[in-house]
Image (cartoon, rainbow, N blue to C red; front, side, top):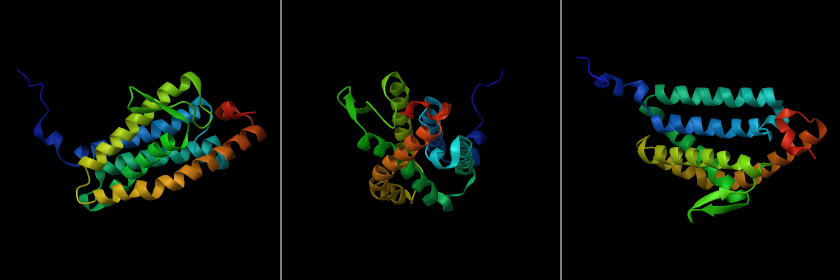
Length: 188
């Protein structure tokens, strides 16, 4: 009778490397693509347009996902830094935009980058999942390089708090000058 268990070899090797970093990459990609689909654009779309922004984010997410599985331990610092960057984006969103608390604990955005109302529930869920997977990746993967991932939010969050407002302003300006489906919530 065939066994339903995975063979031990499937749990080792490149395919088993950095699963949490790969999930955090999926979460970060979901975060920016949700913004695009919800009609507020995504970072860099004000400068590159929706095609250029989409190409940048799709390419970088796909590359990070694949390379997280392929690269050896000598690259742990790079991936710990990437996990720290993903976590920084989530922290900056909850720290920089109006929010409340759900269940007395979880921050819950009430407005963010032109998003409000019912579209925020899935967005909040995506941010929480993205932040959690990045945090788990920082705590469990990339041994010996975790400190780099921990340092990144200390440096990047203050910068993102300012930059996300600038980028949002650029997207609002672009939506006013060139209204389209990808920036429909930002038109004034």
